Length: 215
Image 1: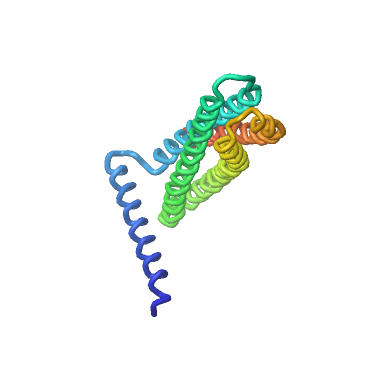
Image 2: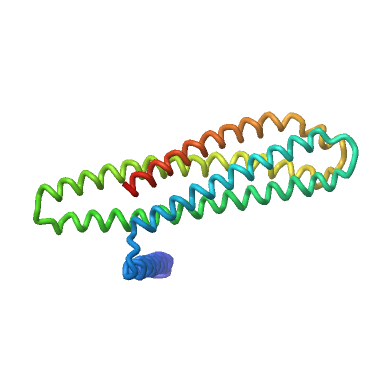
């Protein structure tokens, strides 16, 4: 019996969350805001958060590169700046993940509703047209969300490398420690370059999806 408790709690929490989300969407619909409108808004938010993350990661790379050029001066100050850039990049990455999760939540609700309403048609031609539109929209959505999740994955190697270097410097604030990190620049540059490429692809997919939903 005890082993069933976590399952029951999970089901209850899921049901409660679903009910809250349904109430949330219903409240918006009462003032004329449909799920598709919320979806578009959330895609725009995710796109903007990726653009912000792009700037943060680029800035972190620049700061790391500048640190490796250290030639006298206040090393602790340089370390603190790099640590700030790392923390900002980590926060930007977390924000991207949260934005993507919110997109998936409303998209699931929208597509479920669309599927259900297909059965309410009495006109076969209109039903086929709506079914085709649903299939096309879902296809474009899946392509976009995969691109966004790819960005999410691409951020992790950069964050991991930055964290390693920040931790290393934290306990070795001297010129020789900076020298030991020289070989890390190539890895970070490669990972950031790959990340920025994925970001541009995801942003492009987002813009295409927004245009499709608005059309």
